Length: 286
Image (cartoon, rainbow, N blue to C red):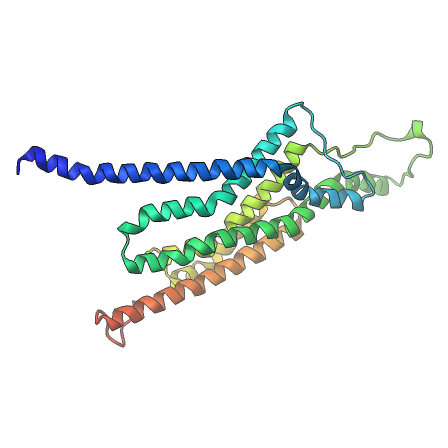
């Protein structure tokens, strides 16, 4: 066989892989577009659902639960953004399936069995974190931010000993919350993504344990540094509200401890498998 024939034979599998990758990408994009269009149809109810924590805070304050838009195109592009984000989430199973079908043939059976649980666990944990952010963190944050405008004037009046003016012409200038659709949605989505990603910690550390990059003993030894890091992260991704920061710290630190136990389980299974294969003696450990 000539050198030219060898080059052509070696390039054939590469061309086949590229053709398969193109097919998988096209299917993923089509699924995303269909999901995005479907989400755009119900984008208005989704927006109302995301804005419900703000609406509840305003109702509790006796104010009209409404958001405003300050540009003619603002609400339209907000609905487009909702359609893109939720369309991506809705089409994620199809996209993940296409990615898995492309990668799986190159994996061993043991590798497939190791990765499959994480493919299912990752979106479930993200949804759990997003639900926690929407139903717990966002109401606390909105109550703090919106109520902050009332807390400062009240504190000033208490410290100065002044009474509220009885006449309209004597009233001081006061601020009123007129929430923008875009900015309110941005804040809600930031909480959802922040907590959704934080809830991926067990998946990330367990995968690193499978790859041998971390160990349960090592994670336990750096526990005090992890506490500091989680506290810093809680201060950065949450409002300056002690209750919200404590909630985030407790949740993420709990996930860190769960991750240590999962890595320890991975190590125990690896040790058992190596002993069965004769690589390790009964009294040896990794």
